[in-house]
Length: 325
Image (cartoon, rainbow, N blue to C red):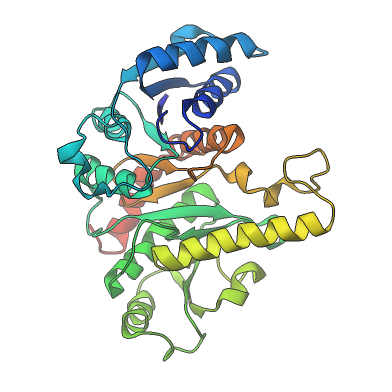
């Protein structure tokens, strides 16, 4: 399979992305395409290949020319009109046309979401896609948090769809036959929260899945659910706050995530790579703008896993079973 990387995405420029792509070819059965400036890519690729410890087949790489890029502070709303040759747009077109099977970008999240919606399209009944993040849970049991940054405001049906998408993802990636779904709210009682959350909970209760009802933030790491559903703003705050808290706790113990003293790699955010855009008709992995080589490398591995486990086919099957076809 081939995964295409957006070399203009990272805050650190194309170097880390290209190093991660070379490392992936070295250790995985995979081909990599790089979208960006051809001369820059060729120069950095040659250096990365020379620095590799293993044997690299240079036929494993392909370059997709893209001399436009979208800044992090740029409004993505007009990218398809104003920057049709931007690197992330080129990446997603390659997936839509079947030349690549997944895209990994550390670029502007809004641009990735918009380009995916417009070029790849959305799965049946999905109105808005959501970023699904794998997170470490208790007793070596990971869980999924959805959405972590793709949406701003949701309707009740959007929350329901996120629950179904998370259910499909947990079955496929976490190997849980009947994942438990929790709806993040300010209280566990049915009458808590805004009307849209109360309505979403009532609908989720009628579906053939194990809905655990409303879940408060302090219950997320108790193992009460396998999937936690929320809007993109709340999810993004939960994700980044938990990462910062983990760093603070480990630092107070004299442990550095990037050093040799890490006692449990499960709590190192770089090991999880990025979040997948669930609901889009293609595999898009989104990394943090400050992602390093390790982050991007692991995002490539995650994208490979989502493809090999046919997450799109499984999600379509679940949507159909839940009456969302």
